[in-house]
Length: 196
Image (cartoon, rainbow, N blue to C red; front, top):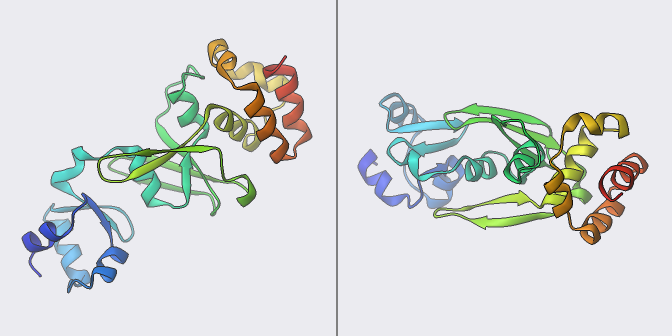
C-alpha cells in the first residue's frame, strides 16, 4: 500500500500497529521505517505513530491516554490544571494500574505512576475531536498526590497549595474517597490540613 492511500484510510491523526492489524491493511514494518525517515510519520512510542502533518490537531492530554493505557491524568498535572499549586508542570503526570513508566516524545514528557487497581477511579472523561482523555477530579488528584508521595503533616505546608483550591474541595466527596484509600496517614492529613 502506498503512503497516500494509507493516510486516507486512517481517519485519526494517530494509530497503532494493532489498529493496522485489525484493519487488515497490507503494510510491512520497513514501510513504517521508511515513512518515519521521510518525515511522514512520527513515532511516539514503540508501535504508536502520528501523521506529522496532523500533529497540531492533537492535545498532549489525549496522547497521554493512548501511549499507556489504562491511565488518567492526575498528580501535579491535574493539580496545576485546577490552579492548586504554583509550580509550572512540564510533564504530563498520570495514574495507571500498570508498572511505573516514562515516555519522551515530540509532545513532551509523560510520567505514569502505579496505583492499586481498586483506587483507579475518580476521574472525568473529556471528549476531544479525535478521541478522549481522563482527568482526575480535584479531590482525587489531591488524594493521589498525597498518597503516592507519602506526604505527612509537616511536608503538607511545603506544598503551598492554593487556599481557594482547598475551599473548592467537595467535603462530602473527599470523605467518601478517603475511606477507599484505607490510609491512616492520609486520613490524618485530610482531617488536619484540608477539612479543618
